[in-house]
Amino acid sequence: MGIRFRWSGYLLGFSLGGFFDGILLHQILQWHHLLSAIDADDVRFQVAADGYFHALMYVIAGIGLWMLATSRQVSPRLLLADALIGFGVWHVVDGLLSHWLLGIHRIRMDSGNPLLWDLLWLAVFGLVPLVVGVLMRRGVGGDSPRQSAGAARVLMALLTAAAGFQAMRPQENGFTAVLFAPGTGQAEIMRAVVSVDGQMVWSDRTGELVVMRLAGETSAWRLFRQGAILVSGGGLPPGCFTNLRS
Image 1 (spheres, rainbow, N blue to C red):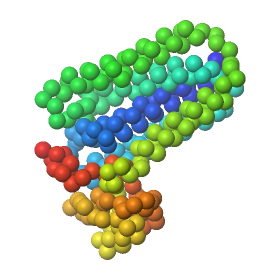
Image 2: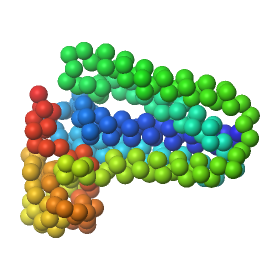
Image 3: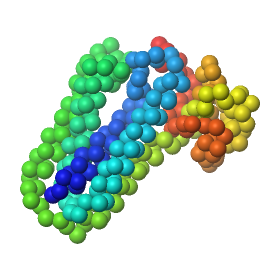
Image 4: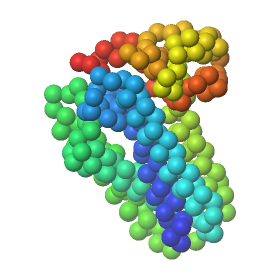
């Protein structure tokens, strides 16, 4: 199999590892943010950093999808093997770089034994997928292209797109975090909230980072036309912001 096809799997698995981390740990479990160990009291800074992190994962996923779409040969099993390798590599890199070398966050910032959680996460989501992917690739050997190649491409594209969309969409609890451009006035922000039938529940000291509750099926994407530069599904109830400061 060509190098382009192999790297498409690596990049897609790597980006899916990043989305998995961001969606599960940043948003659902709320164990940490990307830069939790740096100025944890500045929630605006934390939410923006998470947003740019997801944007980077989108870029990597886009490159992987382009390489997959332009590769001339594909084996679904090899694609899965390479994606598992990329997924595992993400967690190994995140553990070594983010947790220990740079120290920008730990898996559980509120744990009395953060090293235990770091090692457990590295083993389960880093080393295990990496080893399984390598063994799968060795077992496939010179596996020939199959008729399901097109379905494999579509499935990987849909999986990546769904992960990215989940990372940005409002959560089922109805809370959405919105970051407005610096200098946006309070009157403009309130008009933006009203335009989507939202209810303001929290804002930071500058007033430019707000958490709102959306009513019904109102689309939060309309906020981009009102001066928002980031609309994230990471909106948290006000009590969760207190936990960030503890």
